[in-house]
Length: 146
Image 1 (cartoon, rainbow, N blue to C red):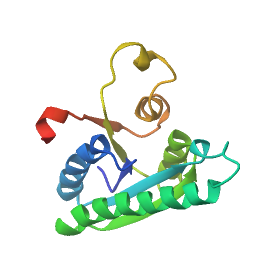
Image 2: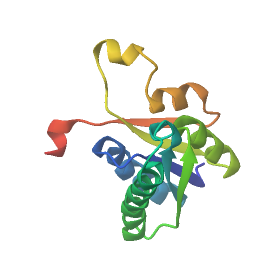
Image 3: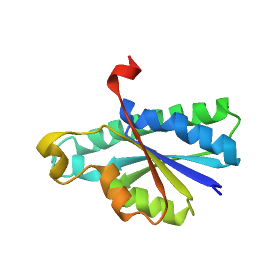
Image 4: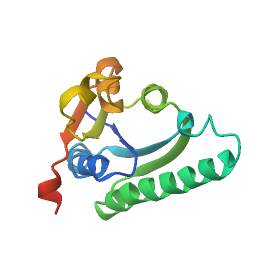
């Protein structure tokens, strides 16, 4: 059913919450896990000075985030593909999913409340609305993580 499972990450605890679910599903279906970090070019594109330093710092953060997912996959003896790309987060996730023939996208969500939830929407919400593949969202509960 699932041969390739994508776990996009931004390095946050909310994103990490989805990793356990993705690993469990990959084990069950003998799937390859894909760890993806998107260096969001909009985060530093307006900076004139120091934009290269910001981009490099974000790439380093991305490498560390996908390495954590790869370690979880390796612990479960699963094949893993690590990718760090630049672009707009939700678009890059959707493009990667299409190009790599992903069967399932597993993402964390931080469960925003109030008006923030209605403004622009999160990356996860945009992926859920636009993906051709099924998307499993995993809610992060700060109290459970502590």
